[in-house]
Amino acid sequence: MANSSSIPHFLLLPLPGTRQLQLLHFCLFLAIYLAALLGNGLIITTITSDHHLHTPMYFFLLNLSILDLGTISTTVPKSMDNALKNTRDISYAGCVLQLFFFIFLIDTEYFLLTIMSYDRYVAICRPLHYETLLGRRVRVHLAAAAWASGALNALLHTANTFSLPLCQGNAVDQFFCEIPQILKLSCSTSYLRELWLIVVSALFSFVCFVFIVVSYVQIFRAVLRIPSQQGRHKAFATCLPHLAVLSLFLTTVIFAYLKPSSISSQSLDLVLSVLYSVVPPAVNPLIYSLRNQELKAALSKLLPGCFQKQ
Image 1 (cartoon, rainbow, N blue to C red):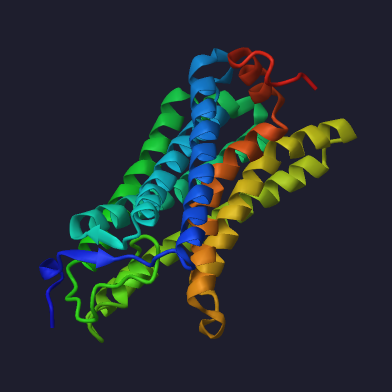
Image 2 (cartoon, helix red, strand yellow; image 1 turned 135 degrees about the vertical axis):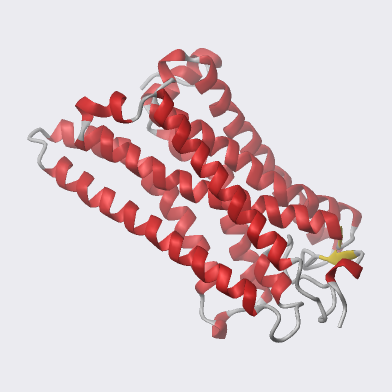
């Protein structure tokens, strides 16, 4: 039995294929990473610089973009570095930090998406009380609670996971460090403590999911009562980006972690991990800016000539 602290480094899953194919994967990751940096960077800059966008919805969108930048920066640069150098190594400390920040940012994003569903509920179901219920102080406290909850959850999981004795080697079957892969390296019964913590986190996540569903049931009921078709369309349009981002986040994460073991394979696991950890941070800015006229107008001021008024 080897103590986890005695392991100097871990071996990440290499990108499959020939050396040429690995370099192609590097270029693909680089393109996605740059797109995420550009898209989220533009949203952050636009919202902070345009006072017309200093509203609750855009405040939460600003936080979402920061989280997306952090999430993709936690996993992709190390994978690109390994692909370029044709190596698999990640230091023990690097693995600990990668796991901590990935859980921290992913959990915080889920909590923030839950808060954003409440924001949409108040905006559509109680519009006259929008600024009161989601004033500056309230939204700052809600965002701070999401960040603090994500940090606490990540700290508990990371400390518990890396306190386990690892007796199954140091090869991680993933291109970044995550809890299920580290648990596979632990001894037969030593991982049960972490499983209980995962169950508690899953129950809390389910409560958030129920809150989101209830919020959108109320939203759809309120929208369907709007007499004009134009009013219904406008109300739905404010919810569609959040629904799209939320659906992309939940479907990829749920399928990645709850798929039947009978269809599990190294290639499928790699594809799914890319879908929930790499693709959303690059796609989310596009989803939010595609049909958002206010954001497009602000972007056109920031980058004259790049956005045409529709």
